[in-house]
Amino acid sequence: MLEPHHADPRVRAVRASGDMVEVETAQGIEEHRFTGAAWEIEGPDGATRTLRGAREVTPPFEPLLELEGPTRALAAALRVGAAPPLDGTLEGFDLSEALHLGLEDQYRRSEDAYPGPDELSAVAYTAWDETALYVAVEVTKPDVCFRPGDAAPLALENEPDDIHSDGLQVYIADEGGHVGYLIVPDQAGRGVRAAATSDSAGDARGVEGGWERTERGYRVTAKLPWPAGARPHVGGRVGFDLIINEMLPGRVRRAGQLVWSGGDGWVWLRGDRQDSARFGILELVA
Image (cartoon, helix red, strand yellow):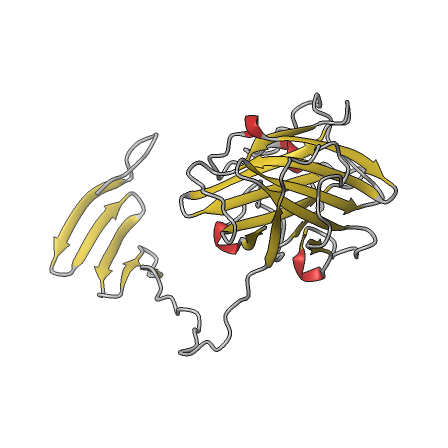
């Protein structure tokens, strides 16, 4: 019998007889019995309380035969002979293979539903060489809200403050693992600041990029080093995902996200993480 207390002990005696245990307290005698499925306690007033263990969990229904599994997002990255200038323009990118983000089922919401492509959408282009993957992302968003690099800490939770800003999260995966980067345009100039996401082993020191305002929003171009051990080649396939963070004037936390591979629910508690099992696929072509 264990009795935590700060004053005089309440338990005066404990007696066991067969399958019953009597606990004598200052208020009277409690009778404890284990029935095999529960622990029953009859108090001095005659009232009975029942304590039970874990309830049996019914597994979710899974069909014996799934004719059509979920389709992963698929796109092509074109090989370049020279790296794009990464100055916030589309120079150096082939615009024939675009990734589109502008559907309701690509949106992770908070309080409000997807506002529509005129308020938030994006078109992205990718390129590659043996050293890096290059990404250009043109975001449509009338009210651009970038978090200043010298802003006071939000102290909201154990998450990077830059998720609460307009900006990007980009992920690359191969058989050895994945890297992810949180990228935000720097209002003090034309560059970007980048940090590795908390669920990856990326090194943001190799990330380079630039940005510029556009008539309908902003555009970011960035160089993302391949994960350690990656061997990019024509015909290769790598995991990839792109997320557009949405911040609105007057808010402390971001309002939502557009996710290339599919929205899958709510933005709360996502932080800067993305499940690698959800990544789409980039085919590396010449």
